Length: 320
Image (tube, rainbow, N blue to C red; front, side, top):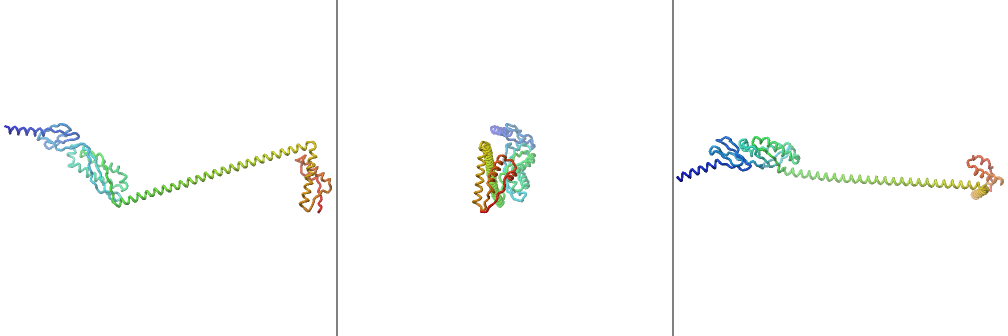
């Protein structure tokens, strides 16, 4: 009886163990009944019919990182490029993940490699370093479309490293160095150009300032000369008016006659000192006539000059 009880107890424990299943959070288990898909167990406590139903597949619904092995790709300009990356995916349909592919992980890995080779083969070497985001997006779109039948959602793909051959790296380094030297030369030439522009601008401004100064100096000088001429003319006119007023005073004409006679005598004396020929009047009455003509001119400044010539008589010359 004890042996039978132990056997029954062991069978009951096995029955309970096979009928009670506890599914962890973020997991999904596939149940088959007599070899066919029956249900998908959700997280928590679940019951199965022992020996008729069984858990065939267990899937994690978490995001899974998948390392894609490195491979050699050939770019559009026939350059070999070693590329490796990492893929992130998530099981969204446990039933399809169980029956859609025998190994969806290997399928995703192979498809990621072939898609990557296809995308890089359409690009030149320089673009592969600049268009990483485009490469990643192209791989994700291609994988996500194909992985729908496998119950898998491809979330993103990231390129970890792009390694060209050593000689290509050396050539790229030389190109970068040449480009930097070119930029340095351009910057230096732009600096010299700006310096020359600044010098020319300064010289132009200086020339304009000097010309403006010279112009203003000439204007000031002309204004000064005009003012001096105006002052002299005003003084001369005032002196003439004073002389005219003095002549009209009593005894003024006699004083003028005396001054004119003195000037005439002085002129004859000066001629006698500087020339061998002396000019003297024919008789002394002509001196009085000369003085009278001068007084007539002073009384009437606007009178014709012919009258003065008619009033005077020619003298005679005598050799000394």
